[in-house]
Length: 143
Image (cartoon, rainbow, N blue to C red; front, side):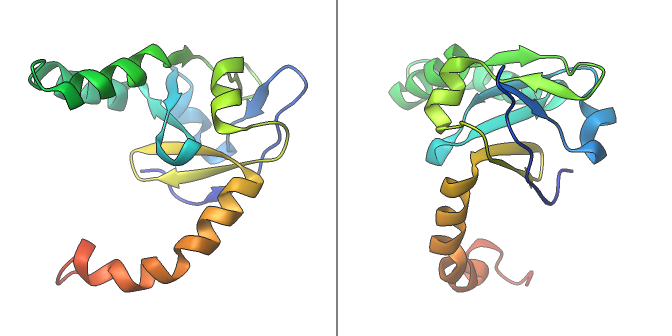
């Protein structure tokens, strides 16, 4: 499970330091792809394979499945962290998420999300009240 908020920076070669607490879990590799709200999703290999299996069994006759799968897989890049715990984020994914230097990496349960720092701050500010209002609808009877 991935938790927390971290603030690494991209270097001039498009490399990002993974949060130290996740390096062991991600040392075997991960897949980075486009996420919703113009962030990137970073999945450990096992989780990416689970999603792949789920999409494989989804009906290819459903347009939404085809559309989602095309964008999800076409933008995906498998990466292996270097000895310093850095991954290279491909230029196309950096452009999609607006990543230039200051980034935020958040734990999002089974994946990490990589955000431009300003975009994350704006998203988080915009969602604070919605988060409070939705707890009963999203998790009825839990919180």
